[in-house]
Image (tube, rainbow, N blue to C red; front, side, top):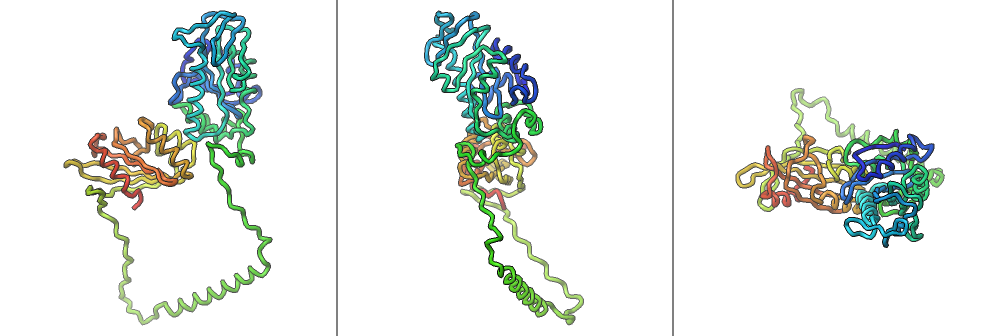
Length: 413
């Protein structure tokens, strides 16, 4: 297992979690996968001691520091925890500390789903200490995919084998995307490194056929077999082709000018299409300035929008800039059109990018427009975004109506 330390462990028992994961060593001889230590993904309510991304599942590990060592810990999810028969009373009055851990795991699962990453099962591990000899959990809690344990290499290994049970191995490429949306700092390992940690190098037939709410199925059109073509068809095609070629030769001979054309004749210039000089929307005049087309959508994004595009397919990104005048001042407008995989993908991305502070698409210079007025919309598989700032400056609430109008501007001209 490869360890990536992003921050300090939020609990004292977190040091034991890190030590247990370190004991696994790199590679796949013991477990495999990647452990993010001291991580707090966006929208997660608390920092986590670790998130372990395995080829067959994801473990969210939350540390809970007990007041004293225990021989026996009774740890139901929905009831009072007891240490050696005595009720455990937390400072905030909660019946048990597992509620916060389950909420954190749920937030991680929801982020993975929102970013439409690899559909791996997400389970919860509550690491307790300083020491617990025996932990008792109801069977119903175990079936929910929650384990309460004292973190040792043996207990964590057992939990991983019980909880990470996906029938389809996560590929190295999908693992890169999954790690990118969980860690907001640093650079995730590349696919080559992840192959050494047990992630597969190709999509298996099972994954291609899997029907999940995170990855829509794409059915390839069947190839036509040559055996089904009649034997005489190629001969017929050749005859038709020869006839067409003969007709073309005759047409060219008739159409080409002879030698009687004056030598000083000037060829007629090819007309060029007229480019629009302005576009008017609701009385506001926009002057087209620049246009750019990109296939690598994620390279032009930042924040959560970038993380989503890293984890999902994007066919093409179109950006167009305009200038307009508002209250006697010049403003710069950026119009963006993203062509995504399908309508559900467009809806999912629109939900991410329209949330405050979720990032967006950079300008032509590769930099975000500072505090830009923003508007967005989705139609079919396309998501449209508009950003407006004062030319040479930042955005302004007075530009919000312009951003809404700009959604009706074409990203292609």
